Structures are given as C-alpha cells and as structure tokens.
Image (tube, rainbow, N blue to C red; front, side, top):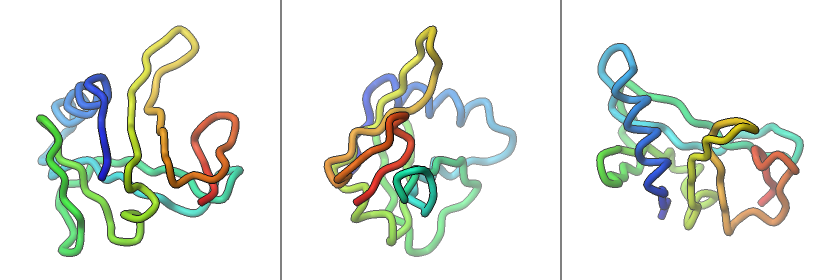
Length: 107
C-alpha cells in the first residue's frame, strides 16, 4: 500500500514523540488543491476514524481515509533533510503529472 523509507519512519516517530497529547497516528491523505489539482496532506491525529485504513509500518501508524486509498496505493514516502530544505517527498505511481516542487499531482 504505502511504503516509508527509514528516514521517513524516523521523522514521523520523532514528530509523534514531540507532540502534545495522545497521537493515534499520522494521517496521510489526498485533497484538492496545489498547482496540479491534488495535494498531499499530513497531520497527526488524536483518534482514528471508523473507516480508516490503518497501516503499522515499523514504529509508526498511518491512517488513510477511504477516498485517499486509491490515489496513495504504491506510494513511497521519504524524508529529506538538506541545506535546501527539509520535508517529506512522495514518489507516487498513480500520479500522471506532478508539479515542480513535488507537493501536488494529477491522477
């Protein structure tokens, strides 16, 4: 379904450990927006929804809503920390086109 690099898993784990309050997992979603039509959304959730797909990858839990599942199937998520900036990078086989910054795509 979704694959995480070791760097992404470590970054998510670090964000969860630094969060205030209980964290059920990291929501990975696709929403309308961005320059290519769809954009990735990441946020820590205190609880999961009844219809979420729950993925446990190593030490982290990912929560994916049913509408986002088809767009994220086979997606690889990496976390890059460099002089140019830090952040998650997505390699999505479902993206037909992607914007230059890699934050949005069209399916």
